[in-house]
Amino acid sequence: MTVSLHWFLPTGGDGRTLVDRHAFSGGALQRTPGGGVAGVRAPRLDYLIQIAKAAEQLGFEAVLTPTGTWCEDAWLTTVALAQHTERLKFLVAFRPGVISPVLAAQMASTYQRLTQGRLLLNVVTGGDSTEQRRYGDHLDHDRRYARTDEFLSVVRGVWGATPNEPYDFAGEHYQVDAGFSALAPDPVPQVFFGGSSAAAGPVAARHTDVYLTWGEPPEQVKAKIDWIRELAEREGRTVRFGIRLHTISRDSARDAWATANRLLDDLSPETVAAAQAALGRSESVGQQRMLALHGGSREGLEISPNLWAGVGLVRGGAGTALVGSHAEVADRIEEYHALGIEHFVLSGYPHLEEAYWFGEGVIPDLAARGLLAGGAPVQGGAPLLVAGGR
Image (cartoon, rainbow, N blue to C red; front, side):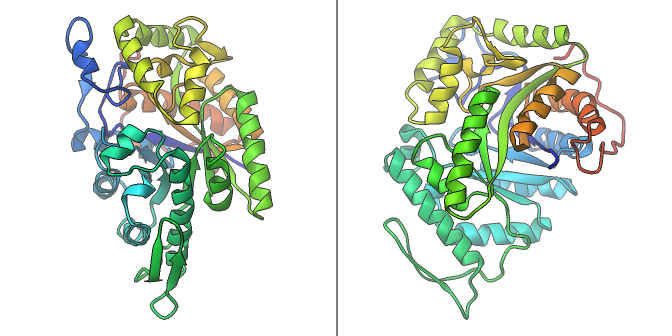
């Protein structure tokens, strides 16, 4: 088993700061002492093209595009970026509750033909009722997962249906009569799925190809892998595993930790408090596990060797980063890989520069260890010069 590396598309904005506009609402950026945050980059198409091209050149297999009311639509953005890349795949996040499963199956089939098979799907059930209600979705947490279970059953059923042999489904949330898609996707997209609650586990076991966890310490990740693997075995299925992490990789550990500390220095107590208050209201069990790693404190943020919880002080979702020299970051990836993690979905601030730090520093090390299929990627063109790791 080798490692598959993926990067992130910041379709909600990017910059040289951890202040994350979608982690909290109510104009927290405007309330930041001293005015607006410097170095924030809008998610313009030309900037996203730079990141996508860099990821492709550096050897990442795919890029994750988020979903939510705080960012650009993932389907439209990535199909536009596909016209500017050749091999890069797109891990498109979407919410089952806001789209018909038959339409989603059709969209995925069309996407595969338009991009020559470069679609991966990241199913996001949603852990925040406030945001779900913005979409008109009023189900509670557990019922959302029950609906996702039905949704994925319908999607896979439609992919296997034809006009002569259509698909019928009768459930609590969906009733489909004679469903089909004109042409099946080729290949069928891999389904990525995450969720730490008791309601999420069985859904992952029945439907997911790759179960994603946020970057918890290795012993906690191992427990999650064992949990999902056991549930999948009961379903007669095999599930692969992935992890979502940020990275701060530098030529020396001292430089990497200096960068992490600078990111903390940019955060005012008011900004952290606003973010923590909003994130604490999340119904997501995974989000609560992220918050528990740091408890809202700036002290003791290295919660495991080279695993830093500082990102989660203000950012929702993935809240930990691998921090260290290129070799140390590669060590941690190898450690997670030994537990059974195959897919690493990574990101950094800013995403363009950090892609190069990781791609030119860590990827060759992973290739030398035999962890990458095909060895190190061939990189063409002049590299981006990054001054001072900013």
